Image (cartoon, rainbow, N blue to C red):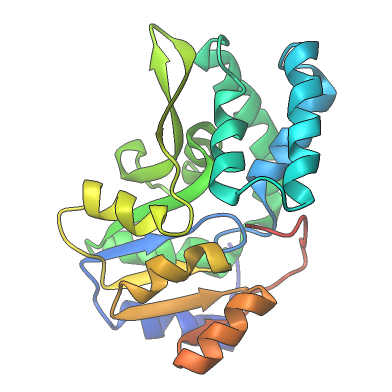
Length: 240
C-alpha cells in the first residue's frame, strides 16, 4: 500500500471534491515519469522488432524529428505506422513487456490513486495520448481504464495485421478533436504536462498541469492554472 504525503492527499482531494462527470488525462509525463513512446521506439529498434530496412529509415527519421525538421504529429503517427505488416499481437506483447519493466516503476502513485477515486465516484475517465494505442493499452491496465476509454495514436488493423493507415494522432489540437469525436460531452477536468496538452487543458473548466515542462509551466502561471508536481524519483526521458 502506498502512503501518500499530505501535499499529495490535498491535491487528490482538491480534484475529487469537484465531482467531475468526465475527466481527460494525458499519459506520458502526467500519469508516469518519462515518454513511453520515445522509450519504446529505441527499445524496439535495439531488439529488432521491425525489419532492418524500417529500422534504418526510422532512426534517420527520428533524428530528423529531434533536429526540428519533422512536425510532432507527423512523427507520432509514423512511430505507430512503422509497425505496418506486423501482427498486432506481436506489437502488443512487446509493449506489455516494455511498459512493465521500463515505465510502470515510474507511475506516480498519487495519479494512480486519483484515477481510482474518480472512477469509484462514477467519473468517466479517458486517457488521451500521442503515444501508440498498444503502449497506452499496456499502461491503462495499471489504472483500471478500459480500452474503450483510450484515445491514442492509432493505426488501422486489418485481420490482425497493422496497416499503414492512421485513425488518429491526438497531439496538440488533435487532443480536443479526438475528445469531441469520441466523448459525449466535454470533460470538466483535464490533466497534462506539456505544450502538446495546451489545447486540451484550455477546453475544460478545471485544467490541472502535472509535472510541467518549462514551456507549459510558463503558460499555466500566466493563466492561473493549477500546477502540481508529483514525486520524480523515477525521472526518465523528457515527455511530449
